[in-house]
Image: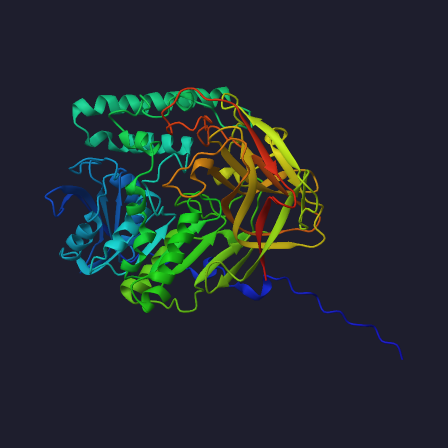
Length: 592
């Protein structure tokens, strides 16, 4: 007797790691308190400097736990929404200005108004106030994410826990490495605008001029670029030399320092170098499309492996969603051409309240939360892991005469050559996430070297770090390498998934530059933004290589001269090798 055979559906590699979405475990609680706002507070530092502060506290019988934020922004603008939300639910919020900002004493200098010890002093002062019950945490991210990490390594006794959103691990790393020209100028202009009210009259006029000039130039550039797929190029971006930039001299000198040479400040300011001093549990929250996601991952990894005690190491948590930078970005809306399902959305304030209710109030149970909680693009699922990176197979895809293949080249010397002229850089695409993630790269691909795979026979699940290894040479003593990984859809759209940059002189170390020997092939390892996506069958992978992306990144003038201090450049003739002896490739993290 014949019977119909039964077939078991092959399980996708990611399915065994699926966990409940964080949004499903987060319930927004109704307010329980009226909120009292206190302005004009002064917090004394150990050296006699006083910081301006503002408080949102629950009305009624206290004391209460307190969340501290330290930033250069206007206190109410920066912390007001969080203050009203959390104080209405039983946790006070204290917002303190960094030195030289929003009424705080001192100077806003190369340490960005946050010298070592200020976080410690702020937490310990807060802990003994009548409205505080002695339990202190921190809020928010970006620059105040850095000050939160900084406070954690200072280990004040009354600091109980942190939730850090998109925090950099180091704010002194200069433009010579990070090179985010647009980002650095926008940050400097924004911070200066928020400091205006606190400046003396003789300082306020040049600061106002900086803000007005930068904003006017940016708006003019935006109008000129209307309807274009490219970022506007403001005259402030074209300025050479980069440092000292006359617009920022005397008002935002830290901007000019960012484009100077690296020094000991970079190593000393990196909080991961002091992870052993961290003595509290931290939830590290970031977004796949945030330019600081590698900082978030590095902070988690360092503290989960090297924090002060086993309990603290076990208490570290990581959550990464499909989000760009910012406290309102956890809405789960599309980023460029990348779309997400309903599981992408997270009520960030409610999620933070849940974390601190558990750690400061002792209410609620977080024990079932995964250690690593990450969103997988495509299936609209959250995955749970015990560590980062997850269990992956690092798979090499090789560059080979326009192709990207999983087989290494088996032929003799082959190379691709292109010229990079800093007076005619590749334009940056407008929109998307960090490095243009989510955008269709086709408007610039005729100016890039491209290497494309055949259509995939089956879906490919990529979760983890990405690296490109280039065997390359340049006619110049210094140049840049900029690589991107895209997903080419059947309709031809080349959707950016990841990217990375390297200034060649820093190929060995960010603090020990070594110029190139012209035309000598060398190996360059370029760290790229991490991935968490299922690339569908029928799609292709593409790696692209170039040496400029302006004005998102500053132009390498190819001279080998002092970073940021030259006005004239030269053309670099760059070569990418892909043969048996020098197999350039990208390393992809295949889950399972």
